Image (cartoon, rainbow, N blue to C red; front, side):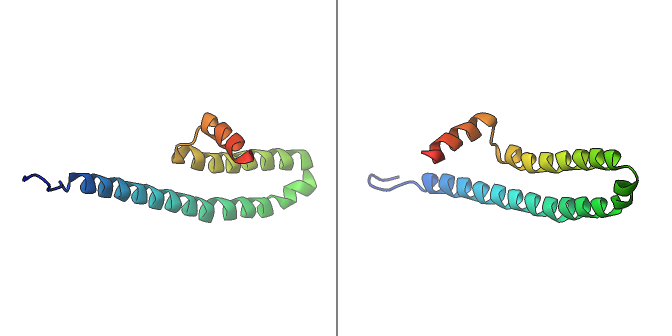
Length: 99
């Protein structure tokens, strides 16, 4: 290579990084979209199907509903884990955005 010519390597590295960022973003979006399409309607359908139990044994109904709601919240928490957020990161972002 002659003096004054620049290498294409930095551009290729930047293009590779951008490609992987875009692919990870697409995978995250797909993961969240599929989760929402499956989990929320099934949660609602289970609640509708369990309505007779609510009349017969309210305590058992609310116990089952609580377990299903915790699973739904765990699914939402898994999005943050999948994105690489940790408790420390969330804590830092909370106070950074608050000020």
